[in-house]
Amino acid sequence: MVVMSVAIGERRDGGVYVDIGGTPIWHLHTGNPAGPATVLLHSLFASSASWAAQVLDFGDGGLDLYTPERVGHGHSPDTDEPFTLEGTAQLLIDYLETVVRRPAHLVTWSEGAVVALLVARQRPDLVHKLVLACGYINSAAIEPDVFIEPLARRDPLIIDLLRELFLAFSPDGPEHFDTYLAKGTDLMIPGPAYTAQDFASVQAPTLILAADRGGIVIEHAVELSRTLPHGRLAVVPGTHYLPVESPEVVNPLVLSFLAADPPTAWDL
Image 1 (cartoon, rainbow, N blue to C red):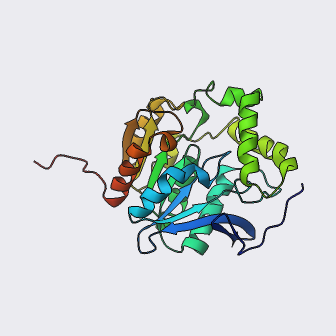
Image 2: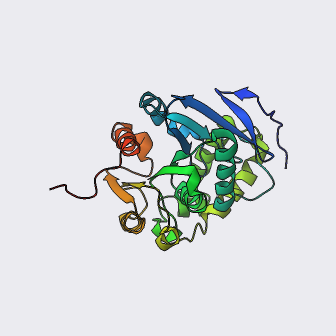
Image 3: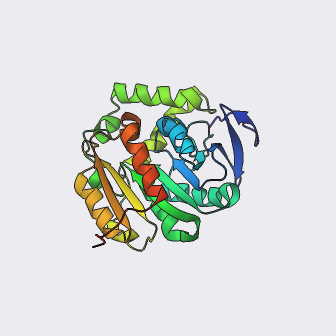
């Protein structure tokens, strides 16, 4: 595997490389340093650019923002290890301990829901609240014709889009794209196999933010919100790219939830 070297402390595109247990990770730290720490975690085949429609509003809303990029994604170089959600969760724990250094809100997208829930289950001392945007925890929740089937058959439109996104930031060079694609596909197919009950012990207040046409069945979001002790559900018109498509709806929802959990009963 050919990987271009990056230097810890090197600044690139507004962010900086940090050492997380021997793994170089690119991250951006912005927003209000006096506000609550909030980590924005992008999904598979994406980068921190996914949150471009949130960063300014969240910063203006008083959040202290951290946007790390997963191994092999965005500006972060790849390693020889496969992509796994469990490995990403452990890296996020290390990131919270060594970079953020205080409990944080975790805002995630897609299969990043599993990462956030694993962290909250394993290290509840590091987590305040969770926001799971268009999230899923098992492959049964996915409508396969939306992305899985085109990815599996290497639909040229999908592959060209993923290549373009990869080349925009990757320090690994164009020759590494096929490896990146294979590792990402191996993670997405067959995908995670967790159940809602696997996370029934998670006490962190959690907003399940679902899109009504998002490629994730609504029943999955309903089950998860009802199983989590402090789960809340919001369904918004849109697709799996809801944070990009409707920031004018998503951003106030997230900010209000992080500021104060909505009431759970009428106070008569």
